[in-house]
Amino acid sequence: MPEEKLSKIVSLCRRRGFIFGGSEIYGGLSSIWDYGPLGAIVKKRIKDIWWNEYVEKREDIVGLDSAIIMHQDVFVASGHLEGFVDFLLDCPQCKKRERLDKLEKIDKVTYRCSNCGFCIDTSKYRPRKFNLMLKTNISATEDQPQIAYLRPETAQGIFTNFINVINTTHKKLPFGIAQIGKAFRNEVTGGNFIFRMKEFEQMEIEYFTKPEEAEKFYHWWVEGRYNFYIDKVGIKKENLRLRQHSKDELAHYVRACTDVEYNFPFGWSELEGIADRGDYDLTRHSQVSKKDFYYYDDQTGKKFIPYVIEPSAGVDRTFFAVICDAYTEEIVKGRVRVVLKIHPRLAPYKVAIFPLLKNKPQLVELAKKIFYDIKDKMAAVYDDTAAIGKLYRRQDEIGTPFCVTVDVESLSDRKVTVRDRDSMVQQRVEIDRVYEYLRERLELT
Ligand code: GAP
Image (cartoon, rainbow, N blue to C red; front, side, top):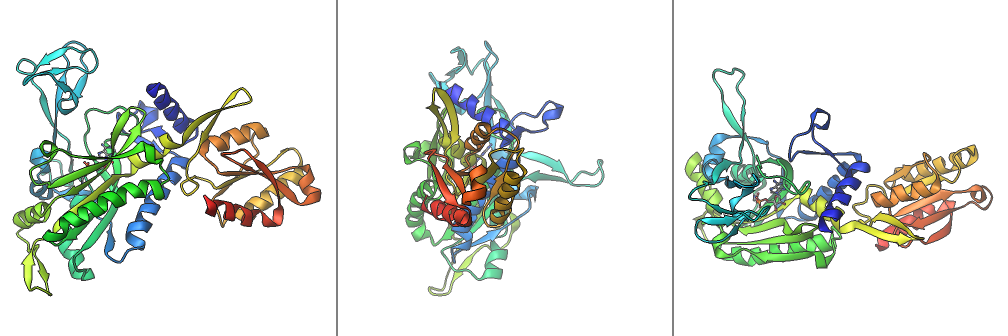
């Protein structure tokens, strides 16, 4: 059943132009995906909501857009070159390759294959180490390569610009630097659609605090980020939970970490991690770059390296959770109606406008006029490429909250039929009032 739901979601995303396979016409690339016309809109809306909430509305957080390609010393300092590895184990029986940390451990050396159940003795079948960093050569000549790396998290661009931001914005603690952007990891185990990708996007904040205030802000961010998914993204509360990491899950420099998890069709999995990273990152960059990362507190006269709280969210995973959460099947007159009950704030279009009959020029003309009147004020789409039933089905599947139909009566009574996506209730509304009506209804949701 869960697999069936996942395959229906994948098929809807493809069929309606949300997500396509990357380089598909050449056979594709594993764990690499492209966003289609509608996917690109929803993804942008997610990023805009986040940016608006944390950069535009706040005085204590500034934005950044740093480069994807970074100097290799950045990752010497961050520890990624040495420690950003997955241990992988190939099952000798069914050949499935899996991450060691995801397998059931039977005893000190034995793990159970999740596919065929074979007990793999790791003293005989050794796990292999894979570094997840993507390397590139930025030199013009092949014989004198200059190695650089694609960032595996946007966070490093924030840490490396810490001094620049302080010097140009004169921010005082506590303050944050926020960034949305691509990150790259050579993930060797893919699957589960866009959950684990090699190229993905993150929305990260590094929130710098005085050491003694770090714990307070950590709890504040955990709560705030959990509520963000419910209040701003519209995800159902029952499909979200917080999971605190146990001490043995934490890297030595992470003081605490909590994941926001979503109940995906394949089970509860990470949507975002909120970590208290102490002063590890700034200290490491200070040591390797030999630059001064100290913060001077002019009230106390003390100099210290700030602590950092890091709420790190995935754009693609939020997108995926939004689609899973909204995907609904209902039986209407004995037939299955697929409807994406996405929050109107995220819907690609707020309204779709059609003429009931496309071979009646007066209806087409009036429907187009309504469309052009609305489209500059609200995301709208015009469609007359199918019969009305099919047009409704299309809009239900892409989550359009309202459909407006122009029929023959509209020509005389100057009214149109407005259909609500979720209730399917239809109402006649005066043409001159349609935009106002939609705006009011959309503000109510
Ligand atoms: N700077 C901290 C950091 O990068 P992370 O837990 O590795 O922490 C943060 O990543 C978020 O980025 C995850 O919660 C997830 O939403 C997203 N993410 C990480 N790896 C991903 C991948 N391979 N594909 C899609 N999203 C990913």
